[in-house]
Image (cartoon, rainbow, N blue to C red; front, side, top):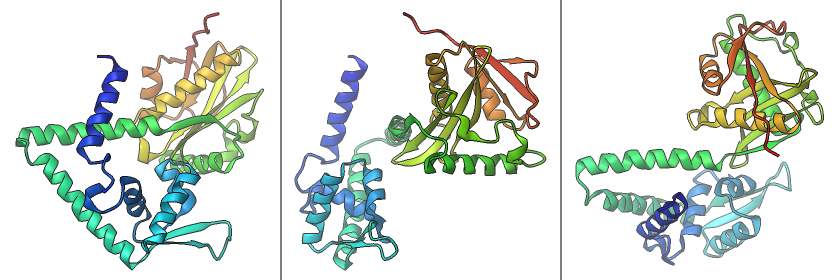
Amino acid sequence: MTRIEQVRRFNRTVTQRIGALNDAYLSQRRPLGQARVLWEIGPDGCDVRALRARLDVDSGYLSRLLRALESDGLVVVERSGGDGRVRTARLTGDGLAERDNLNSRSDELATSILAPLSEAQRARLVTAMAEVERLLVASTVEVAVTDPRSPAARTCLRAYFDEIGERFENGFEHGRSLTPDEAVMTPPAGAFLVATLHGEPVGCGGFLFQDNDSAYLKRMWVAGTVRGLGLGRRLLTELERHAVAGGARRARLETNRVLNEAIGLYRAAGYREVEPFNGEPYAHHWFEKELATPRT
């Protein structure tokens, strides 16, 4: 069985076991899509744009789901007083009651899945589910070339500077670092990548081309909420790919000695430590890697 066939088989088994094929999900008189929207809106309400990104559905489909829930008296969609373009979905009293019932029935479904298994099997299943969830989240992350002046890029950079400011022994002053203006990391001088999960920025990295056929990598960062998903390695691989496409034959970077996880990542990715090649005041280690050229 190929990997594709195994994934499809897994999908069929899961959708059947959780009742996704039924018109009345968890015997609630409504399909899974509507039930999921109720759950995601939550007791505090949710911005419709954030809801669409979180569920990864198009605006037309989400509008139909919301209209169906509104007609049943479970949801109201209101325009924000501060910004008329922003709409917020909120649960009514009946909506909150149905969400509570949905929560109870979801617990019952989970219990019914675990009940026939032995204790050892339950432990195996829950562990496997946690790993599958992590990998599915990892596959949901999108990485794209982005203007470093964009809101998503600035969000990542602010979080990165805040983090290293706390971790570096003597803090961090952006203006003292090499490449203090990330706006230069745009084609043809370089590129800046941002990783997003459900529309929210969760990682970044950029590079500049140098005269010696090198790509100088800077500002690699991954949000703590998604660490352990392999996103750092994926960002590094994407940066290298874009660098090669632009003509670079090697990648160079430096890092601070307190960033042990970054040092481990670079070494595992084939970077070798070299003599200092610049005067970055916050660096203690300099690395270089020969990049494979694409086949013609």
